[in-house]
Every structure is written in structure tokens, then in C-alpha cells.
Length: 281
Image 1 (cartoon, rainbow, N blue to C red):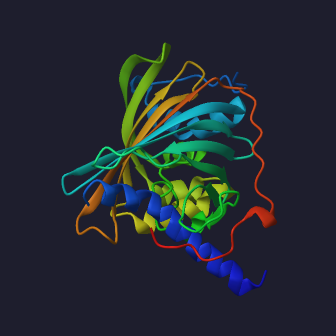
Image 2: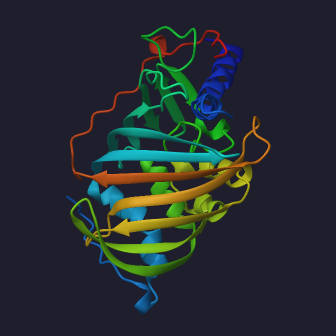
């Protein structure tokens, strides 16, 4: 494949990824090895506890994940849900993403299969004209939101690495997430700081998001178990979508459970990646 063909494929792929968001808005009318102790704001450690949550996940190796992305603009609100597994050491994951029904109540589209990897997103069942057995590859560093939003689900490890940019954090209290006792922290992260502190696999994507969002400040709520592992994290993003006049408000929630679960994510071979034209939907 020539360099020009590769650039064409990446450009098309970025359009398809953005389509996961745009088609929804339009269709709606518009065991851990770390053992890190968990502190709280009473000893002034809340920010540091939150910032190292991503490292604790690497020690946990892997988990199952559920995602939810709620988007609102101009009175329109849609929710996209996903479910799958993630390997925090390899920074690879697999999600099945479900789009919502259209306003007429028609059956939702086929699930979009997504494979997550450092710097790349692979999607199947997304994009008119793409053969059913082919994947579309997107360079996430080319997306203005670093694929925190436009894939319809936030990469679980990227969601954790956003917290490396925590500017403020306060301990809210103890609560429960899916039967697990957790400590709840609330604060604000800076995407620019997160990009500088992130792993090589996410630094460029987060840097793109810091420039592409309406603001680099990201309010968050995170729930950590007794080992410091993220059980739930919720971010609130704001960005300007080219098809919308007003900023789009996005609330992205990631739930992690069954730590140490087996994960085998195999990325597509070159022959399985679609390089042709993707029709407009």
C-alpha cells in the first residue's frame, strides 16, 4: 500500500469514527498486584491518590468493562453503551458498542465492534460500503478529541490517564459500586497536564484532545476500591462539533470489574483492513 493510500484510509477512518457520534445526534433530531493504599483529602493526599490510579490498573493487569456515553446538544440527548474487556499492560481492548434507536423507534443498528490499541482504533460494522468482514482503522492521534468521544466509548486506560492531570480532588465519602465498597473522589483534570504525564500510547491523543475540546478542563468523579483500583470513573467533556452550532456536552462513564479476567485481543492483519471508499451515511 502506498503512503497516499494509507493517508486516504486514515482520513476516511477518522470520518467513520466521528460518524459514531454524529449519526446518533442526527438520528435523534440534531486481582491487583499494587496493593496501593487509598487515602483521602483529610491527609492532603487526594490528588496524588487520583493521579496514580492508572498505574494501579497496570498492576491489576486486566478487567472487564462497561461504558456509557451520554451526549446532549440543543435539547437532544442520546446514550451509547459498550461492553467488553481490556488489557491494561498491553493497552489493548475489545468493546461491543450499541447505538440507540432512532426517533421512530426502529430497531437499533448492528453493534459496532471496536478494538482499542495505542494510537489506533479498529471498527467493524461501521461505515456504508465497507465489506462485513473488513475493519476500518483510525489513527486516534488524528482525532481532535483523541478518541475520548468520537468512537462512542472512551478507551478505559485513556480514561484513567486523564486523571494523571488532576489539578484538584476532594474526598466525597464512602459508597458502593456494584456491591463493592469504594471511596468517591471528585475534582478537575487538565488534559494538557495529563498528556505530558501519560504513557507513550496515550500522550499524543490526549494532547490532541487538550487542543480540540472547548476547554482542557475535565470535571470527574472516580470511585476507587480498597486497592486503589478504579471501579467507576465519570468524565464530563465539552467540545464543538462541526455539525452543531452549540457545544456538545458529553458525560462518559466507565465501569471496571472482574480484575485479572483473561483478555486476548488480536489486531487485524493488513489484508483485513478496508482501504477503499466509505460511502456517506
